Length: 340
Image 1 (cartoon, rainbow, N blue to C red):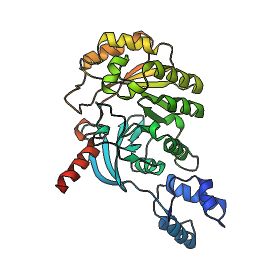
Image 2 (cartoon, rainbow, N blue to C red):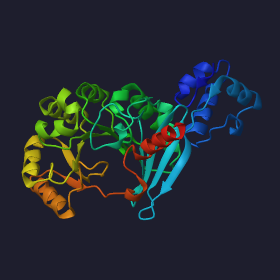
Image 3 (tube, rainbow, N blue to C red):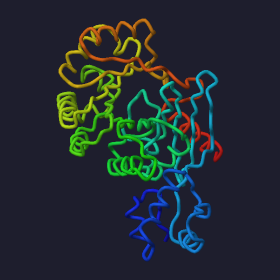
Image 4 (tube, rainbow, N blue to C red):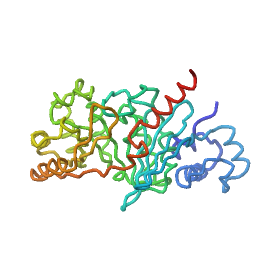
């Protein structure tokens, strides 16, 4: 059986290439992770005999783009990719400071957040670190990577850590950990475990409400890990790593967007090294609608007056189904319909 090579570090490749000098493994790693060449036959600084042997012993994971949509408004690009037996989505977002790609970490999602299309059609499987990388390499060149697409990155903890190790390796893409954001809906044990790694990444917490009463209405995970457990974990993470946390807060009209909610949020986050990213919610159902721009400004002003750094995320790719899970869900529905 062939071994997958895109998820291997140079020393691991070297261990499987008995009789070859160490630098050959580094050359292969550079072809894959720096030059993004996914054919052994095109790795021209390797001897032909070695390329033939690689072809017999290894395979390279690819994310084959089966649908690509480009926004006419802001040049956002949405990719739907085929990963063997699963579909994954990624989004390339263009900013003045450089391109960012948002990738999926699972095919589907177990978390069941009601405002997120990732949970539609259920959970299929975890993605591998190689499949993370393959999504990224469809969108190069780029400056930032966000693990905030379909799935919960900390529910796929080991593969997420392996991906970070691969993507930051100096012989490969060599992206700084400070340019990687990992999002979680609030898996408390994994937050503590991640803190122990003391990585230089940004951890983003999908908070979306200042109270358990509201949060539990649309985030089932809040029943397992209420705020009395989540907030101390976040505080510990910031203190342990010295890294500022991001709290993601999707504003829904009449649901969690009043001045009273903003003041409650200030009290909740008091003393934590953090900033809040306010997000006009993506309309994926009739239950939630975006907060009007003026109400978002009022909400942001209250946070800023209470010394909590706050940004308002610019909405990108609205007309191309750029919200997490929308293209995957549509593809699955198409296939189901075709079978009828």
